[in-house]
Length: 543
Image (cartoon, rainbow, N blue to C red):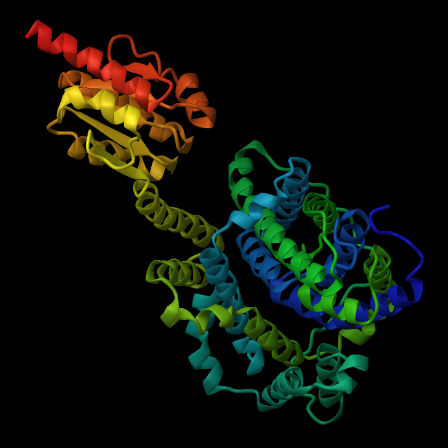
């Protein structure tokens, strides 16, 4: 059930052990970067790693703290530094929202997030990680206030560089970049960088700042308590945390699918990730998501079932219970070197290389999202990015949808059959048909009315042909009603032809087809022409 079986036990054991080796230094680094401390990073890897594996929907996926989740969590921790119980409540609520997304089967809708927004957001997060690690890279203490405050403190840090820390950070970064080949399969770059940096600090570079006291043992429970006054404040960051964790996890699930040639269950994965993050909030730990690096390492080592992900978490738990004295000697500079490379890898270089060939409006959305992520805050970046992307998409949709409006000047149009031409012959040039093909939405609603009215200025009868109209949303339906009313006000006869399927259902449900004497409904264009002939005949007779 849920991908569990014992047929691949040996591979799952190798995968779980290898993933734990990779996860250990990253969990420590992310915990320190978040402001919660290294033990919070480790317990985040344990909680999310275990429960996401057991209850999730991507068998080979390994979960834990990631760069994007760490940046969001760091902002939340900084905001509620004097009330950490609120920060942990936000983490718990974010996990609950993730699980709710899965229960409501919203997993597939995440793929609708515009790539330009995801690219800008992820690149911004990568930039934030690099920026906030600049100070520890040079041996200076971190500052509160995010990337802007960090950049302001860089000149002072450069004037007082701790060269021992700089040497350790440079060595760690070099290992992260150049540690390749077969040796990297047995000793992953993050762990190699952590070991080398710690040995350098313990032997001949003792002046580099180290992590210091690290608590061990099982963590205390943090029962989420949110007052009525705080509710409005915590919903927004919890939603962003849930949305980011959802995107991060499902993108990694796609990577796992590609490597293993399987198909994940996105809604079940969200439930598992949500449970894991809820437990992380209860333990005062760092939230997490599906981790690409750890997942790839797990699969390459032979992991294929949730056993490997759960085992990786249990191995970390066994280490945590006695790891404190060892972790205390780890220099901040080694973690900074590791995270510098992690931040670099998060930046979407693939899209940045294509900027010159990408549509300008999409590039604009990406850079706006990136800039707001780095220099304002993550919540604003997501909101503004989605809004601008929505406007850009609406502009494109309008252009495409309006191509479906075709004016058929009657009776000479070649699209008419012999019967229709015969019916039109006595009508002269008094009738025009407007063919509405494809779909029409809010994007084209306003221009729909304007464009049609511009085409029918000199006609006495108008046929609106919906034969090939696939879909009409509420905005477009109201635009159709406005058009019918406008024609009636001008004394122009209106006949609606060929209306069926979803388009008819939308118009009827909104009452648009309750026309009274404003228009008539015909099943086909030929019948509509007969209605037009009768209408115009009566008009001419009355005149």
